[in-house]
Length: 250
Ligand code: PEP
Image 1: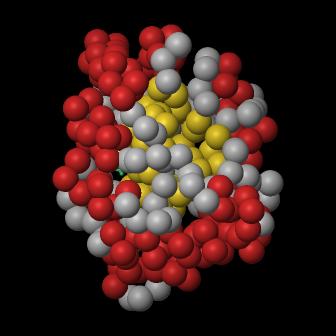
Image 2: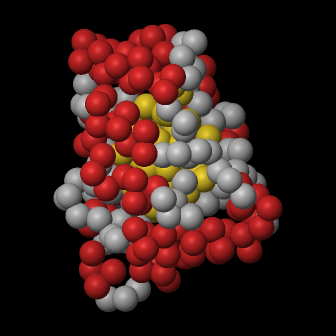
């Protein structure tokens, strides 16, 4: 089964109208050469202007979070239907920084992914172990627990991507070896196959995230179960982001 790779940029809390606009434009300018799908996830205040700037280009637009409910008294939050209203195709849910800084549990993440699905968005569901869990040899059982808790029933290859992001690799310059990363991706695919069906999971894209850079992208993306990347720091330089995209062969 060949899956078209997806290279997604998580800009986190970075970017102004000027700098974010220039970054999005530079990504769009290089997008025609890419053999993969491209997605940028700017901070909330840039979603609308960048969505407009990307209209008509192959670069898709994603948000970094959404609320689980559709509207109401939730100061500072954004609902999934609001994101689809302004042209988002994707929303990241369950990033480890949200789990850690905002106390999000697997249950919160699952409810947000369900809200994304109801709004017609693709949920990019993030999960990954801490260094302590890896050192204790408990990565596999932890990942299975996160999958069972965070991935809703009704998830399909069309409405979901999974991002495996070992917490200890995010922003640190450290990565698992490509074989170690692939081992977890294969576990994710086989565990979800039991729940969601083997045919669906053969099509499901599972991204790797955590210090992916132009220098290590090709060997990570060459692994059979790594179907793209969720890129943080290297997504803030169009040249680096596009170099990673160039390493993702369809
Ligand atoms: C991330 O936070 O999703 C991420 C992968 O960050 P970085 O690429 O900077 O490690």
